[in-house]
Length: 451
Image (cartoon, rainbow, N blue to C red):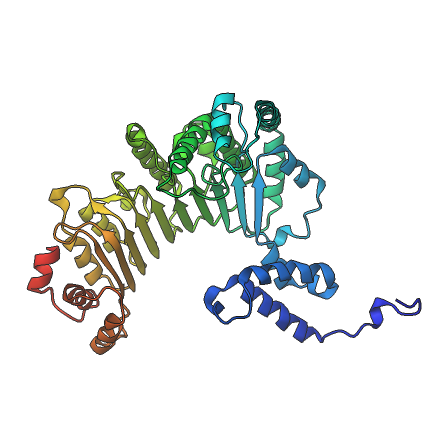
């Protein structure tokens, strides 16, 4: 570049065009509806967004760009991550953070050398000699010790509490698990028909059992940080078996945790399969986490999702009414046993409810095998606009599936047209759709199928 020319003399796009470019990049990197146009992949545009920010000052200073790039903050209970937080100036991005993802350290002192060798043996990058394996194991032990000291010294809690206090309006906290995405496991899931898949499942079981102490300390630290910082949280997502690992429900930190602003709760406490001998423990854990979190939920809760076990939906969904939860807009349950009369009462007494989704659920017992009380509650409800069943067990139809739009503005002809275009096309479903949409009676066919 000639010495007499500066960057200020470079031609620039008008501000409104720069803004339009930013809007398009953000849309292309986040909205899958455009896929198939042959203009690249979403990942291409996700990469382009930070690249433009680094090369163009005007682009970097746009609020919509910062909001797109810094909406999620990932934190790990590891020494390197905490050091990064301490040594990085974050004040410019914190106003844009809407979600905080919290992950435990992947290293723990309860994992012995033999189990470690088993874990690494099915990975393509596993050490080839005993000495290399032992050296790698010692390195993991050192990391585990540093990460454990981080919690017990109070350093993790101090750093995270201070950081949470600086967040202006975080809409959600995600408590994540590493058991399904662990650095010691293969990058890709082995084929279910291969012997490696059985080894993979065994390795996940090893990680699960060896992580008990690690995860318990991690959850205690999170609860203390959120309670101390008095962070106003609008959404909580628990993507791990928190109840199985957490023993502090009766401790002061949990009692002092307030979720007064909570609007959405998502629980995935049975995300991973467990051996048959541990299934009862898993079910008890789900019941425990449901009870403790729902007891914390205020009247502001609008969205609730819970995933149990889709293979054996034994855990039972509790009655929401007893927790004072009556302002829900949407509810989605997966892999849970449902007491149909109680659930029907919850639906009837939630006047603002608009969406109901049940996936791979079943009634609690054969005596409770008819869904008519629930269907009647929806028929008489004035606001429910969508009802979706997928793989729901029923006495007469094992795999009950449909997805209904119950918009009251739709005419009978409109419902018929929408139904003919759906993938759940049978006469029983059509009669049910018209009944739920208040456009048809409870017919003899419906009585035979669902009554």
